[in-house]
Image 1 (tube, protein in one colour):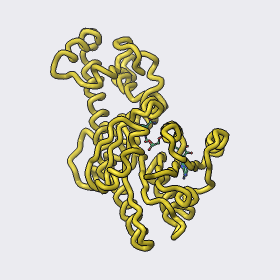
Image 2: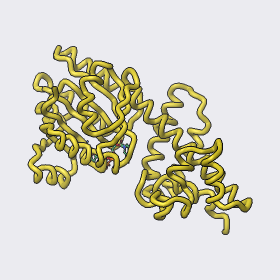
Image 3: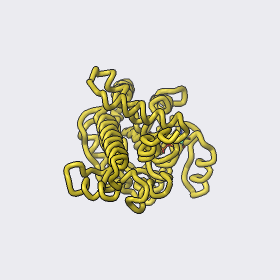
Length: 307
Ligand code: NAD
């Protein structure tokens, strides 16, 4: 149904997602402000465009994968943004897979629909952020959380399936973004809970290996204890066992918690853990640990102890 697919934002995640669309046989058109990455795609024989609006003019559907809300707004509504293409816009579907706040996703969905009323041609918007990092993006095994009309979700499913494994419809506009920030909030808080308990256990004299055995056969078992353990030496193949390199960066976790905190304020939700988690991960970034995996928060409990 969508033969020509535009892709804007060819960074760590987007370049791999675009590669999987190409492998699946889609005729892909790309744009990024980074010329080096554009050159790489051009050398592979992929059509590149100088602006977002030109991508929307040349594609049946466009996917965006950008750092944050302001970049997304610029690509959609800025001077060379996709919604400024008037009658020349060919794209009928816009999918934003960036992690942004649900309020912006909803605003964009309205902007796309209003644009559509003017032109009477019916493009629609889906917010579809992803779970799974660079490795899942490369393997085509991402989870997509999709908000928007169910009909648009159904029409876009083949596109999602060429980049991901689990595609979950979450309801109306903004619900994909809501699902994403709530998932990462719960992940941050559970990582903090497990790290704090391990730190206390060690201070009281129990080894992390023993405590892990207890957790994993008891009620504290969770992803942070049995799959992504934050204590160095307890599990192989996790960031904690390689000096917290690789994985999901503290910087991105702080960004997602910032979105959760702003959303909580916006709707007046009582979210004390959100604000505390945001503060702790932001502090880690300020202390120069932003590029380390977010499970390095375990070390935070020992900072300054021996000074
Ligand atoms: P990234 O910084 O590696 O890539 C972003 C790309 O967007 C860059 O190539 C940049 O040049 C481009 N860009 C920025 N502004 C632009 C503009 N105005 N027009 C065109 N291109 C522009 O980021 P990433 O790690 O690929 O993450 C992308 C999104 O996915 C973020 O919202 C992030 O929170 C989310 N996410 C990332 C991960 C991860 O593990 N990296 C996991 C899940 C979700």
